[in-house]
Image (cartoon, rainbow, N blue to C red):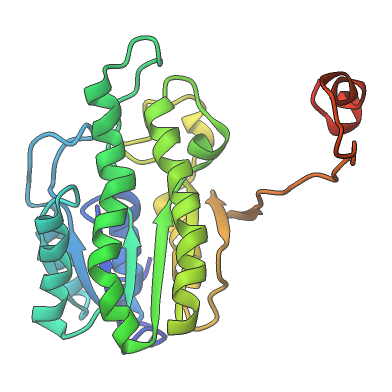
Length: 278
């Protein structure tokens, strides 16, 4: 990674990134700043499970400033309306606008469904799903007024396709796909494009999972985020990025079998192989 500014493709943009103190969020923040964006680095500085706090946001801001970029830190929580408003408020107070929002904040509370507590289940939804809802809700009117905006949600292959012991995480990550699909429709007339990143990278949150030797670096994922936030950004895409490899994830409907208005259980059973239901 270059240690200085070397591009101007985002020079007029103000970018807010949640959970940007380490890992993917830090990488995104530095890459945006390298390209001229002014960046709000949000992070509580807590542990992987969300507990505690620390100066990680300011550390990233210092890195950006040392390379000649412009950034400011925010340590509010994404899990409350007040915190979400303060995150966007930091951008408005310092830079007067919000163009791009990357919802990256996340925690883990991994346990099998049989053993997980409802409290731990909700805590993950509060950060990944509701945190994204609250911060996006706070940024939405600003983007609508500007007739331009980019929103990125962070899902994952584990969330979309499932991973043992992550029922809470998967529920949140699939919820973000539904949220994206609706906001695509509601934001299009105001120049707002909404997409979802499905990253795979070795970070604090993934190092305890299986097959981490096959995970790439955060810097190999950030190009996907920059693309999803660019002038040429698509709309309503789930883009998977891992280890320098990129692919689009699609949710498709298979070919229908018409059994007529008087369909019975037996009729459906007779075509289950054709529908791929066995």
